[in-house]
Structure formats: C-alpha cells, structure tokens
Image 1 (cartoon, rainbow, N blue to C red):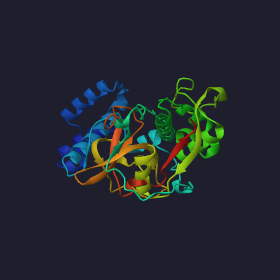
Image 2: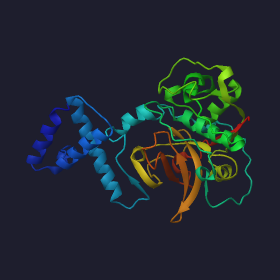
Image 3: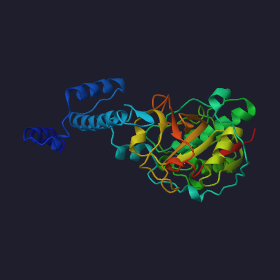
Image 4: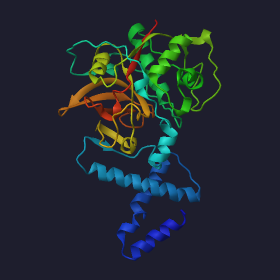
Length: 333
C-alpha cells in the first residue's frame, strides 16, 4: 500500500484535487525529517522510510497548525515525531487503563490556606533526575519510585535511586501489569507488604518484563503507609504537595500531549473519568501564570521531552482525570 501512496498523491494533485493530495510531502518537510533522523539516530528500511516520512510530515503540520493558534501550550518535534498516536499508545501508555476509583481513600484534608506556589525542586535535593521508561508502559513504576525517592529525601536528607524493574517484575499480585500498566497506589502497597524495594544499581531497568529477582537483604527503601487522596479532590492534592510530598497521579494522555514542548497543557478531547487514565506521573509543585493555575509535573520520557522532562498542566479542573487516583507514600526511615 505504501509504495503506491506518493503516486496517488501526485495524480490527485495533477487532477486538481488538493484535498486528496494531503499525503504529498514537500521538500522542506523532507529536509526536516532527515535532520530529525540524524538528531535521533534513526535508520529505516526503504519501505519504512516512506511510512515514517508521511507520519512525520503529518505530525509536523499538526505542530505548526497548533502553534499558530491561540493555545496555552506549544508543541514541537521530539522522539515521538515519526510515530502515530496508535503506535505510541501501544508502546508507551497502558494498554488497559487502570480504574483509579478502585483505590480506597484515607487522606483527611485540612482547611488551608496553602502557599500560592510550591516547587520541591527548589526546596533542596528532594526530586530525583528525570528517567526514561523506554518502549514499555511502566510509567506507573517511575511515578512510584519518584514519589518514594522524594519522600525518603525529605525525611532523611538522602537521595536514592530506586528500582522500577523490581516493580515491573514483582508487583503483579497487587493488580499491576508490568509493561501493560499499573497504579502507584498499588505499587506503594506492594513495597509496604514486600518489606522494601531495591536500588537501581542492584536491580537495573530493562524496559521489559522479566522474572522477579528481589533480594530482601538488598532493599534500601521502605513504606510505612500509603496516603490515598479522595477521588477528584484536587484541593487535597494541593495540600499534600504543599505540606508533605510530591504526589503521584494518573491522567489520560491524548494525541496532542505527545508533542508537548512548553506552557500550560490543557485539552478538550480527554476525559475526566477514573476509568480512562492511561499514564502515571509525579506532581512536584504548582503555581499560576497569567491567571491560569497549573501543576509542575515530572514525566518519565527522558530529559529531552517537554521542558527538560517536565510539563505544566492546568490545575483546578480535574484536567484529563488527574485527580482520579492521586497518592503518595509515607516512608519508613
């Protein structure tokens, strides 16, 4: 099918139907694709090259159209620019969304007031570096380790790097599914009942499911309790981030989020229900800009995605269901 496409496009154009020629790729787009390939060290077979070029050009047009409109965030090329959203969903997001509403809440919210802005990255060495989950829907494990790494650092002053691979391989009995998804709240429960999690150095990340190799004597971080925030109580998330710890949360990623570059993300196409969430991340702070309140969020797609691996998302509207299953661990230190 692919080989015929450029010919069909050329014919459509010659026959005077520009609408049917949407697959034609111009010289500038080809040049940008080759530059992008060099930057990201990509190589393709001849057949796949055409397919990836078409997808890249489509994404590039989407970025340009978005950036010329009136939006609170900008899009840009990144490591996902040669992929369709269907491919990205299959490789990087949960194949089966986890139902956040199954998590029992136990967090009692106070009455405030809370600081107008908080950023745990600026309070001290309390947020670990951005990691990269690779082509495995294991974001929930990175949200989990990120929250626990912060919790331990805040309590003890010691910054650890914890093993996502242990959670991928070992946490299935707590309704987690390796590269197919899971929830940080359930992963915290696993660490609590498992009596610990090992370090990244002794149980390194492989971006694929494997046999559980947990060694109790090598556990370096422990959970005493799990704070599960009430379903859709975004104000309680504000309190938790302001007073206690960065907070793990899940939300629904739609296609425009993948090409996010900067600014405050908001969406009209995502859902706000707990059964649609497909990606877990870590809120490390919040603030407000031009009258729009936002969360500061650590992602797990490496430091070259978004704003050095971070993004801002609109706060106060349960954007994309982000208040559906927020939680954080209380460490045993």
